[in-house]
Length: 98
Picture 1: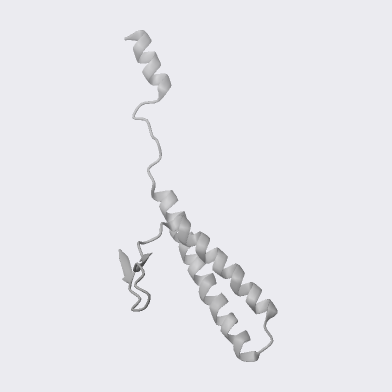
Picture 2: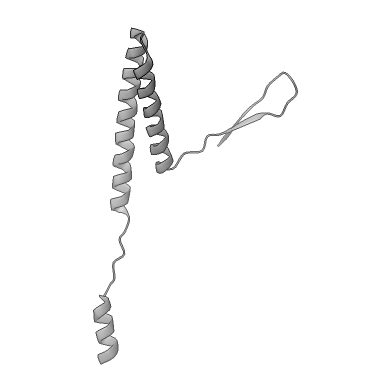
């Protein structure tokens, strides 16, 4: 899905932003980066209101990160593993001995 923004001034082309859903790896990476930024902001802030803000943001991002990594773990276990109907040795034996 794309959203178009149109500026009334300066007859320029409208800006577009791609709002298509991210895949799971991209979501995890973006959440990890946001978490690093939030930790950096928390380390450098001195105002009590902003400290509280960073604490809430870090907690929310940690929960999101945990949820996304749990989803990724579930997806990796749900993928079908390569399983042979017959073992390769059985196929070889049946081919040799008919």
